[in-house]
Length: 102
Image 1 (cartoon, one colour):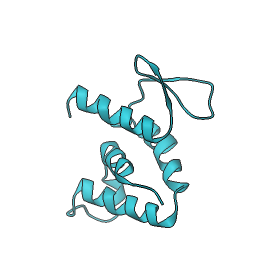
Image 2: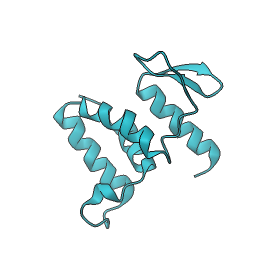
Image 3: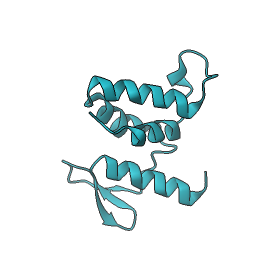
Image 4: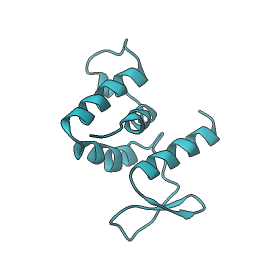
């Protein structure tokens, strides 16, 4: 993944989470007064678990099921069980962005 692709993916996740772009790679998460500077959802598991996973938990059952299906699809069918242990932060981002919601 190139740096530009990583930046685009991170920005897309921030927008999907409803964060406000304050410029220069700084994003203001909803409901927080602290800023996160250039969040890296593509390699930082803490960012994935802190922001993406709770957002998925708030979705309806259909969207959560679709997220799981997309996570498997983005990572590949040949992944052994438990498949979610082999997914990358990037896989989580792409699956999260592909959900339309319900």
